[in-house]
Length: 385
Image (cartoon, rainbow, N blue to C red; front, side, top):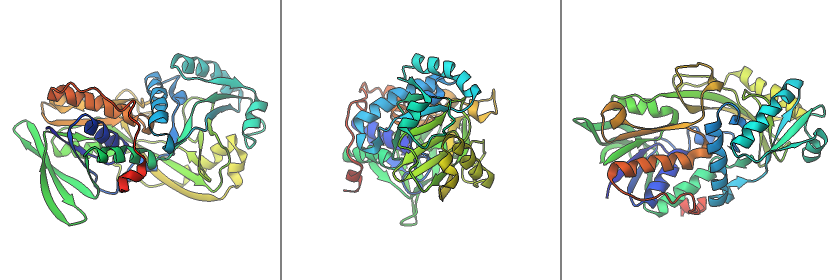
């Protein structure tokens, strides 16, 4: 039985461990900190319908709507099917509506144009001067519980999940990766683990790990600031109806509202601060959509780095695709036994795992189909049982 080592205990690593365990592989996953302590546990919790990307990034949009439908079936306990609205506040927003609707319909996203009065009837806290709105099938997800469903299912099928175990070295023999060196923060011991294949699923930290093996992966950390305020001001996800930008979304999460997000490009995901002007920017611009944001008490602010795929054609972070890529370093760098998966979104974690696991099956000569589209995930509490 081939032994697959996964580096990274975020959503992608969780979904990949689940997929590979279902296909009968021996799976060991290592996370240097607490599970989900990277970007996965710090995003705003939107289950994307794909509408945000339908105009400028249709591949990502199609992935999002496909995966949101699947996640609703296999992990409903981690989701709130509350829907969403894109709201127009200016004439420019209204001008964007035509291309937005056309893009959504082309990507297979069910959307519906509604009047300002209908929108305010659904969400009374909306700006009374809004000019139009579109209903979209967005939803809220629990950023921790959803991937824990995957971890619980992977664990029940034999995957070994190790937190607080950092990969401090990648072993090579000739032109092949043969295993990893682990530092266990619980025991303060180092040890080696041999594997047939090592998969780096560490998000924005993937570049640091591939460097241990002497290769590169085109990951570009894209940090963003999010702000939580102490009230659930809307029951639906609220988006600004304009091209993707900063501070144009409000996500209800239990008794809070999450405002986000800003976006810039960074070199090191471990060296991120929260620019205070970004916090105020989130509040000011989100208040244009829901004025009550301005007088709702502040709860917290944080930053997380998206693992974008670097685009040499642009330095505009909003223009970089939210698609994902899976790299076989044998094909890319003549290094056998190492793969990387980067990019994507929390909504597409299952699809990223499926594509990666399909490639692993091809490499290992195993003709085993993916079962994660239909397999209902175990409840997250099973991970601790």
